Amino acid sequence: MDALTLEKQLNNAPAAPVYLVLGTQSAIINNVKESFTKLIPSAERVMNVGSYDLEEEGLDEALDDAMSAPFFGEKRLVFLNKPNFLTTNGGKSKVKQNPDLLKNYLEHPQPTTILVILAPYEKLDGRKAVVKQLRKSAVEVEAHPLKEQDAKEMVEQVVLNAGFHFDDGALNELVKRTNADYSLMLANVKKLMLLDYESKEIDQKSVSELVPQTLDSNIFDLVTAVLRKQQDHALDLYQQLLDSQQQPLQINAVLVSQFRLLLQVKILSSRGLSQGTLANKLGVHPYRVKLGLQTVRNFSLTSLMNAYLGLIRCEKALKTTSRSPELLFQLFMLQYSQQVR
Image (cartoon, rainbow, N blue to C red):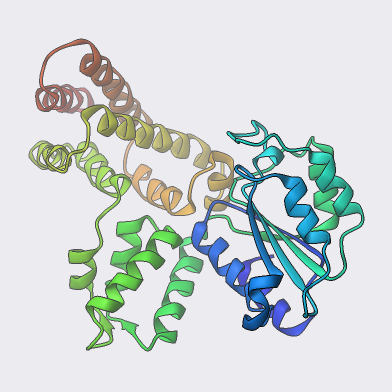
């Protein structure tokens, strides 16, 4: 279920003994934590709410807390944060955990405790016995990146609930500058509401002035200029990235990544795959796939391949020659423009 469905259920029915919150969207995870915390009266939270970082603290201590009876209350709430021992690589941890402890608890959970496992990962290792038991015992809540429309609706609701509203174009500008990342959108909305506190209106000008574009957003503008053979504009955008202290190798790496994505979208979309299927298959945010689909319609596979290979050669030159990054990018643009004619 998603976070909104969870909140409705918690308001209308008793909580389950165990929940798994899985996904990388930090803002959603924080919202879910707030929803659970509200279940415990504020006067009881000091004694009946526990939170454990399993990269730093022992699972045995956390589960001992979960097994304890609530102190002058009806329920105890225990958060298990960052259980990286449930993932494929195990991650980095100062404490070696015993997964059997959690497996045993899941088989017989404490009825007066709400155990919430907060896993900020894309997925868990389904081969592990403890993960299999977790899937059986826990109610799973998704905290994965939201689709563009869902992110827009949730952010707009936050703004409306606070007594503000977006003017024409402001919300779309926020989406563009954050790549529709819900966590980034929400963080910037809080700043925008402070800026426009008196008027209660968030306009496009405020968004443009206050919200910095992500590197991916700036790179996408550069990708578009490259594909359209707008050499002066592309060089100007590249120089702006350098002026903003972005490293040449990092810029080139993101460019390579973007063109690789465009090639994948071009090839797979020609086989009839939908936007949602492409996002899942490629493991990227649906908004990036949407932009990619809009872009590749106008350019041939050969054009995309030429740009990709040219940037690979540019990366090699950045690592092996003393030529300036600006000159190397200019040479790439010249060569690419000649190839696509």
